[in-house]
Length: 67
Ligand code: SF4
Image 1 (spheres, rainbow, N blue to C red):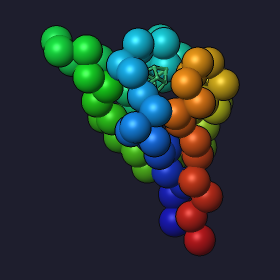
Image 2 (cartoon, rainbow, N blue to C red):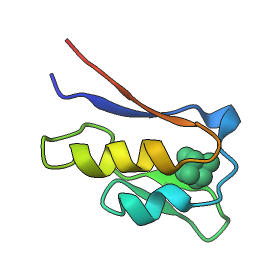
Image 3 (tube, rainbow, N blue to C red):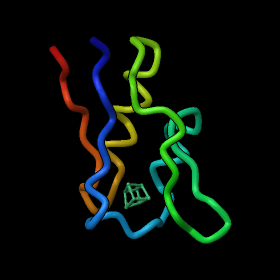
């Protein structure tokens, strides 16, 4: 099963820093809410997802290993 990108919503303040690292996975809508476009990670997504996790100043992202 694919690993998942998980948002701890109470921690996320919608600053959007993560979207620059993984625009295929994350975006900010017109109301400054984070939108998860796709949370199941392919191998190709992994470096970008890991970068998004690293840069989040709120530590609101993590990768959950499945299976
Ligand atoms: S960088 Fe972190 S706090 Fe900012 S929008 Fe992304 S998940 Fe939310």
